[in-house]
Structures are given as structure tokens and as C-alpha cells.
Length: 167
Ligand code: S3P
Image (cartoon, rainbow, N blue to C red; front, side, top):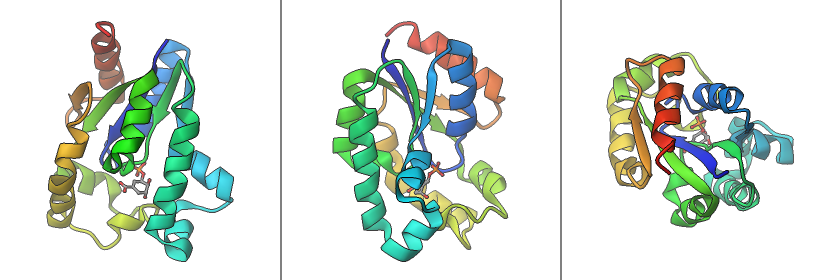
């Protein structure tokens, strides 16, 4: 079976939905950020601070090269994976690309007081919206798009299950 690849802006629910989907479909759950942290024995925030974003993106692509070769996995991607077309081309070979969309207001609500996202420190709804607008065409390069704002993890999972059945 093809992988199900979850993309979307930070805090769009990729990890929670991915884990739920994995248990429902009895598939393995993979999280690209966790793999990077494991490989480098460092938290994402430390990698950004000590090595910079460019280095993080290189490590991210290395992990994508590995996981894109798998099959029958749920792959939850860091929010910036889509920015490099090469990553998406690789993931598409064995996978269905699902984008989870959440509004800037909703993302802001979910991330307040969270220190784990270097790109969203001291942020605001306006700043989130600006970054989202820039990334919009990259997120739209997907097979299935789900609007998540008012939906539970369970409902989003069910929607994905019904939509992947046509692939
Ligand atoms: C990033 C998203 C983060 C993480 C890193 C950069 C991004 O993952 O990869 O902080 O550029 O959108 P989540 O989307 O899981 O928060």
C-alpha cells in the first residue's frame, strides 16, 4: 500500500491525526522531525539555534530521501518539507500527499505558550498569516486537502480514510 504523507502548516494537526490514522489503518507512524532529532541527538529548536535553518533543511531532505522509499506508512512531515519540490517529488512516488489546513487564527490559538517551534517565537496572527500566504502554493501541491478548523482528530481521520479510497 502507498504511504499517506501528511503535510501542512505548523500546528495543523499532522502528528495527532497521523497517529490516529496509523492506529486505525494499522500502519506504521513516522514523524520526520522526530527522526531528525534522533539522528542528530538534538531538539529542533537547538538545531535551528546552533546550526541554522539551512542545515536543518539539508537534514530534513536526507530524512525524506530515506522515508520516501518506505511503503505502507503514515508519514507526518515538518511544516516546511513542502518548500523543496524535490522532497515532494520523492514522497509522491510511493505516497498520497494530504494537506491539513488550519487558519492563522486557529494556529495562533494552538501554539500560544509553545516554545518548540523556532519559526513561531514571538509571533502574531498577522505574522502567521504572512508566512501562510507565502507557503500557500506549496501546500496546494497535494492530492487531498482537508480543512481542519472545526473538526476533531477523529473526524479528520475519517475524512482522510474516505478520500484515499479513490487512489
Ligand atoms: C517547520 C515546522 C516544524 C519543524 C520546524 C520547521 C516549518 O514542524 O519542522 O520547526 O518550517 O514549518 P511542525 O510542522 O511539525 O511544527
